Image (cartoon, rainbow, N blue to C red; front, side, top):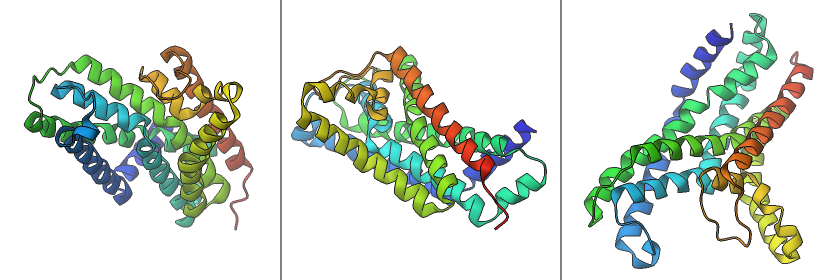
Amino acid sequence: MFANVLKAQQSKVFRSSVLWVEVGLLAAFALLITVLRNVTPEMGGDSPETVGGQLLDILQTTGTSTMGGMLAVVLAGALMAQEYGWRSLHLWLSKGVARSTFLWTKFLSMLGPILLFFVAAALVTVPASALLVDGEVGIDWGEVFLTVAAGVYGVLPYAALALLLAVIGRSMLVAIGGGLAITLLVENLFVQLANLLGDGATQVLPYLPNMLAQGVLRMESEMTVAPLNPAPAAALIAVYTVITLGAATVVLRRQDLSD
């Protein structure tokens, strides 16, 4: 039953126009950043002089920038909220699918699309860098694989958050609006507030989802505190994701879907 529901969920998400619009936007974002880093000295800074180095930079940016979290929030929030509007959730439940099974397969069906974000970024960055970089190709495919895997993993808490908000609000407005507000505003405002409050408050910053993603990706940070090491950062991402999905499961199980 679980495998069949997951297969159906995956088929639905890959047919979604939202996904392909997001893939196009991310590809355009990757292309823009690649071009600016190579043709604009101020943007380039210490950018790597190899295609492989620039590819890793773009993949890390995709995983830790607001862009990655935003795309995950919009996709997961839209697809889950649609289940209420179209009453397809009611149809699944009428067929004997458990509410928890439906929710967790919905979450797992997000893994492929999130991976596709990174693949799209890579497919655009490699040829663009090859044309613009005056240096070696130097692609370490093992490092690329680990970076993509870590990037996908780091975005998962945002997808889980969008599902929770969609279940609570039963609407795209709550799921996407609330998720983007947290992704764009709350994390950034917390960073600014912590910096104003001093060293004690900044010690909390490494535990924010975005900083945890930087830790998993083994990135340096411009903040006053360094990200956690990859192992504890990965563990906390798992904790955040499971707790958020657990809360969504509890809410969904208690919901009255008769209206």
